[in-house]
Every structure is written in C-alpha cells, then in structure tokens.
Image (cartoon, rainbow, N blue to C red; front, side, top):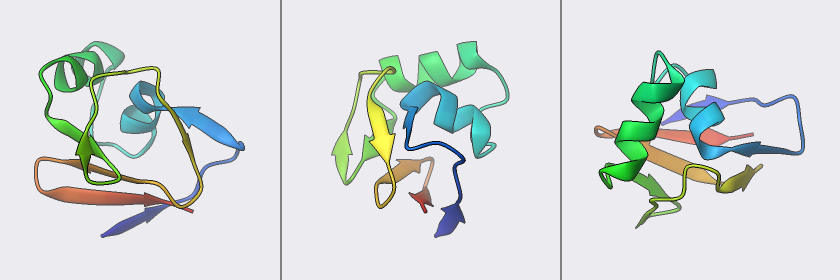
Length: 68
C-alpha cells in the first residue's frame, strides 16, 4: 500500500490518479475510471469527479493508494 499525502481537504478521483502517479495524463485517468478499472474504498467507481478525502483508498492495477 502506498500512502499519498494531498495538500487539500478533498481531491477529485481523476486528479488523484495523476497526483499519485497511477496515470500519466488526465485522459489516461479518465479511461481507467470509465472502463471500471478503479476501485474506491473497495468498490468499483466510474465517477471520475468523485471527491476523495483523507482515509480513502484507491486501487488500480493491483496497487493500493491510501490518502493521508
């Protein structure tokens, strides 16, 4: 599990995927989310604008990222 610190109270899912390095571009993040490849707190999420906060976990391609 990777602990990722964010500098704001909330971050949108697509922006977080870029921030943590899971996606290199916004368009790549958008595709991952639209195709149902991303899990937020253990559940598949297809909302790329989903607001994430400290304590949430994001899973993509077997990697888990926890927001701290």
